[in-house]
Length: 244
Image (cartoon, rainbow, N blue to C red):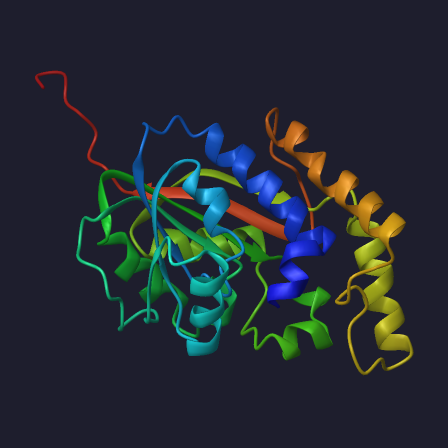
């Protein structure tokens, strides 16, 4: 994973998209950021451009790789959702879950627990894979529990007492290729899912350019379908009365 996420077009382009999304959130300088499920630390340096970053990861080997890769620059702690979160309440301005929620059985309880870690104006940015009918051997290999429709994700978010600020599909331009790849894998009963290994350099570059170009589309409007979903959410806030 550490090798793949540094070079594979999907990971590299996703960091470009996420950086673009965060830069448009109107966040103050030097915010406190938590990445939940940081894996081998591939997103930490990107997040550090926006503030002070801490991380949580349940796998000891992944934590060790992340600490070595980032030269010990980040506070990376052992923990898991929803019941073993090693950070105090009201500690973060931004909490990030990048393709993490689908790994957790108790997704609503996890969002509810993370909500308590937000400062009063804090927000959560999350991404998840879309469409259960796209389920493949890759989901099995990664120990996913589910994929989401936009309506499913909205239901989970609202069930956790959170309010949606932005919800959109993404990885839309390459969606037809993803559908074809899934169909081919099923037809030929593939032992592993297509697209998991790093392609040859020209193809890797092409897919990176196409996927990362979606940041320009997402600046203008939400995308109606895609391989993934992202959401920006915050705790429900009482409306301010005229007297206040």
